[in-house]
Length: 356
Image 1: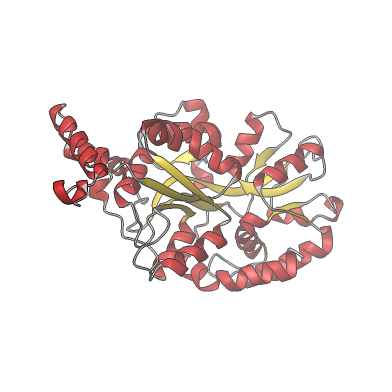
Image 2 (image 1 turned 90 degrees about the vertical axis):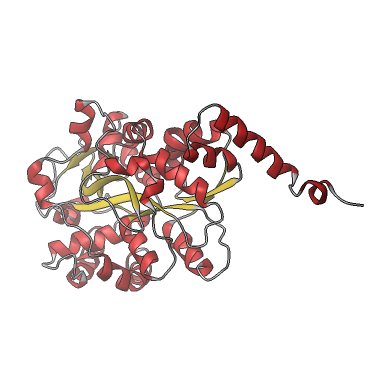
């Protein structure tokens, strides 16, 4: 006996897509809107967990996608775990992740190892509003910031001025570091030790010196160190300017201070893994991510500066999250090739020498 698909040449799902397409055309929808309407499958998003994922849900995934019928399944883990997964799947005929959140340096590492799809910007209309220098062939940035000093003003009355201040023996037992952003400490202490973004070797010795001097507490994530600083368990650390601004606005006893060595710049955004299952929805995700509403909302929630020029942030918020012209000139940018070549060894060293 013939099935319905045999008789009509269409499955029930395909038939419903066709009906939806016809309705869209009748209503004057664009061909891009039509394609998006036809794609009602599942979208798998790889991301960090914790408040980062929660904020992405609030700013983008909930209102712009899930509330409009997109079924999102989230794959949440630390960046090294998620990178390993994408690398393991790069030669499969079909991957399990459709869109993945990473830093600019992580994205470069994945790209040179053949794990990413090139970005077709013709499918991302809002990319026309990316700030100068932020269009990459494999990575779409959503927000940016830089690493600076953060401290508890109730415990440290004079604001710190250098990454060297974390090495002050007076702060023994009160210095906190975050395992999640370990690489930024290598860069920061490379600068302290006379190295550079292309030579972190001097930073390894300085981090060992810091460990001997203050025995830093290592926390897995931003949330944990914020709680530790609020309780007085930790007095000083280094973190993104955006985090300091976010916690200050939340009335936590945490303030930011720009280091004399200059901040460590970073961008956060998304990639499309090689052989992603649902590229149509992945591009819809990226376009919605760059839309003014989502860009404005994520900056309001996280205090990271938007990567686009049409987010329409209130001037007072922009002053809180952006750097001054002088500070921008001092920002240090990651050498992607150098980082990609050395990150596995850096992570091993960090785990053996600092994290233990």
